[in-house]
Image (tube, rainbow, N blue to C red):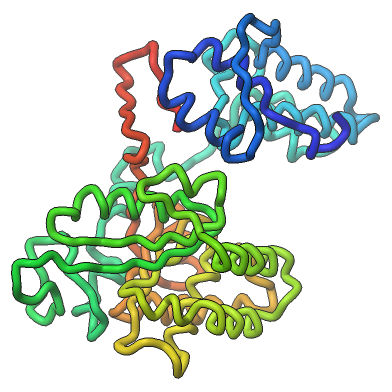
Length: 383
């Protein structure tokens, strides 16, 4: 093929022959690469003769021989090899194979440009984890974060979550009565990983005490059906959010104009929810914060749950970065809101960019209903 648009994942059919008894292969890989992309899947009845890692090795040999004279061809070979590793490197088991290439070799040459870099592994360098796990565990602690010092969530409809031994004296919690509180969470995103984690954890572990209704509005149509309940946007809301995502990605419309349009389209729907949730991209959290300041916004102001998953300046135009960062600081400091990251490194990045030390709530992927036990050397977990 001469274009990335021509690349596909038909080689997954050959891999499936080796993993045909795996429910998770069907549930996640076939769904992700075929069903969600609306591509017909046809299991192979006999081996095709295609060797994935052998082909990747051949591509890197071609890239090596193409450089330095034919850079475009070398990049095409390297990009194809990178594509064959799958989304999120889901097929990257090169280092446990006998083929003499690694994903690091592929990635470093994809970024290197005109010279071939013969590195199978990263050179020695210092990193936070090499002297033990204490650095990492310190950054997973709730204590010392901007959330831990908030005295109470204010006047917003907010319910105690099981952090610590109990709610503070001034906490506005469940109230009296035997009925479980019914909480409506309105969520939107362009990638469902963090929102899906929230819906799984809350639905699974708080169901005895809270009746939480998630109103999902994700436009990640290849991912949003992987969770229960599913988090896919529907109807006119889906059309508008898809348009909104395109505007942010294209950077062709001023933020204020998009914010006004967002409020006009969705504030009536938002007003029916108790909690507003944002995740990816973080700039959409600012849309919620601004919607809460609108004269038409519901009272009391709705709390915003910001569960961040990617760098916060994604889709933020350079001319609008200062305004966005100031808005995020105000959102995080407001005692009604909760802001967290799904990994310690993103939390450190947020601290560096804004001064906010936010907690880390790691993703556990419990929606997969699968467990990886390293003692079973014949198994791997693919999620």
